[in-house]
Image (cartoon, rainbow, N blue to C red):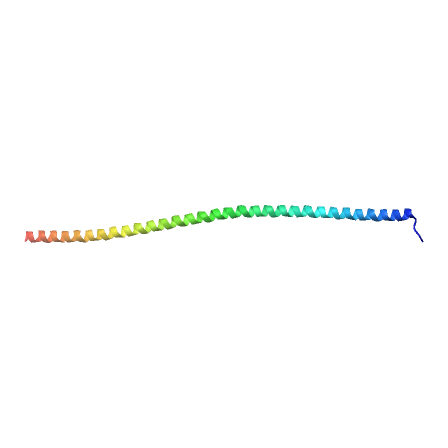
Length: 116
């Protein structure tokens, strides 16, 4: 059985309409997928920005810790120098005390010999 040209045209038009509808559906799906991709890229960009900020804060914190350690080291060195100066002063005072005791003993001996 041979189809009339109108029926052939109608079938071709129907097939074309179905293909256009399928294409529109695929375009809608692709558009939704692209929207999701763009949203995901924005989230990743935001996360990378937050990581950058936190990294900068950590870097500044490390610098502050380094400065504090340097100050502690300088203070420890100053304290060591003060302890050494104190020890030298104590040694000097000890020597002066020994000499003073000797002078007092000689004074007493000299005073005792003068009274006898």
